[in-house]
Length: 321
Image (cartoon, rainbow, N blue to C red):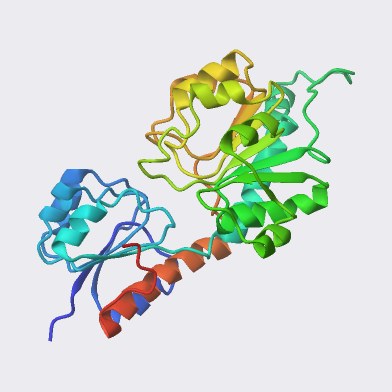
């Protein structure tokens, strides 16, 4: 009996392929490539399953060219690279890998916040350029984090984990979310207080975005929202590219409408808007919020578990539709 054919669109940690090979005929992508639509179509015509990261976009056209495809298992939390409407039409199960990135991403949001507020990368570049010849009273004056107001837009699992970490900085936490948390959840999240989006923008000294990317959250932060923020405020995006209007943010940073931004995600990544590179008051990282070895291994294992569960039980564990 022939095994179903599976395409892995990304390299793997040791042991992953061995687990999958018990159930699938596995085709592995050995290098860190970003698949074009044509490349995917060429690979998927005979495939029954896909194990993917964020390096491939499964458009309606791609999916239509895969008549045997039954399941897509993403090792990521986000799945906006997969056309779910077309998957429903073709009866393709789709799963993601939630929960496993929560704590690591919350850690990184704080790393980005601290680096941005305290001008860490800007001062490091200055040091590396050999410009440090004396102590300066007003050199690289940044913003305090302790005792300030932290705003969180998007209060899911990761947002709540970020809020809990604010306790150590003696911060007041405000949040806005599609739905309000329970009183018990708010208490566990450092007594976070629910406010309107407008109030969140106006009162936050440091604003962290943790929204999923959907049609309704596209450009949730644009020119109008940035205009409502405090001039000394910092904006941190560890959510998804497209939640922020990058062009509007560049203008706000250039004019000092807000003080600084720390960004791990971007519109049209990895094609970074070149104007970001001309700004000193922005910290840029290449979508690495989940990049600890333990977490990336756990993400891949979650994707494996979804695929095996599908073969054994006809359904994925973490269905996204």
